[in-house]
Length: 381
Image 1 (cartoon, rainbow, N blue to C red):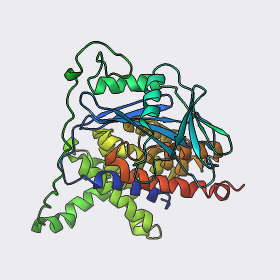
Image 2 (cartoon, rainbow, N blue to C red):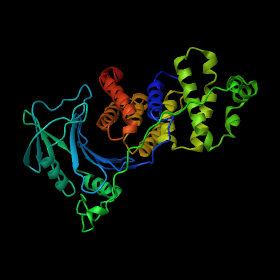
Image 3 (cartoon, one colour):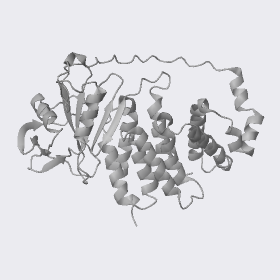
Image 4 (cartoon, one colour):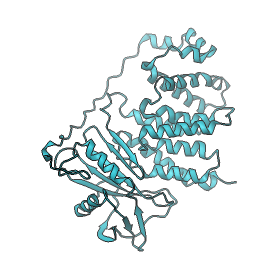
């Protein structure tokens, strides 16, 4: 197993770490169509993000945010991503919509506190459900487009998620239903630090139990066959921790010999609950399929299936699948174009759109920038 497994392990560990000791909030809404994506949290706040058309070097994105409840305004932010290589708009920026200059705009900044003017936002709200040619004009007069493909479907889904369909305040499907009928925003969940279970005398004994270790070494798959869905977190995290130990100690033959145990734990978790933690096991398997000893001819195809399922389960809103597949598979297959496209897609994700994934997205986007800056070295032939 190679050290390339570590970025995936890091990404997997960060996402649940922020809330592992507390109950997860009620799942929100996720939706993606063409170049636009949507995420609504448990307070009924929705964030829709649109990206540049699929063209290299344009990392601009536009986010529309709306809190739940009747009569709330839409807020808009412009973000200019960076990958360390691609050119970026220079000088003062202006917004042009369907050929009309709507005035100056600014990047939202690290604190996401710089907004578009309300008149600009209102104009975007009115145009996006139909046809919107959105361009950011930089100081040199160059136009940087942001796609409207998928915007109408995403904004309609936002209206539905917030209960606005048929009301005057809907963005897409307006009607004469009272605005007061829109459900109120829900309170932000209170996060309480969990109490760790006190160590038990039997814990150390279980870890050293000769019967358990003997069974795992003799026939790992059979040893874990009796595990149930309730055991998935234990199977998964034990397997990931085991993989990290092996990855960091690849010169230790005794640890390398325990690779089948790690694989049995993770594969059993995958069998029992393949969508655990929004596809975390699939992200892990991308790296594992490409780094295991004696990698078979179809390893890349299996890794790709895990990648596609992970993207589906995260709604395309988490950077880990893109970065992990680019680093683990695209490099092995010598597919530079795919490598760059995947990392650029990871950088387009708005880390603030899903607060529970903000940390993992921030870390994996840093990894994406680091990899892009070393593209020539990675693909030196």
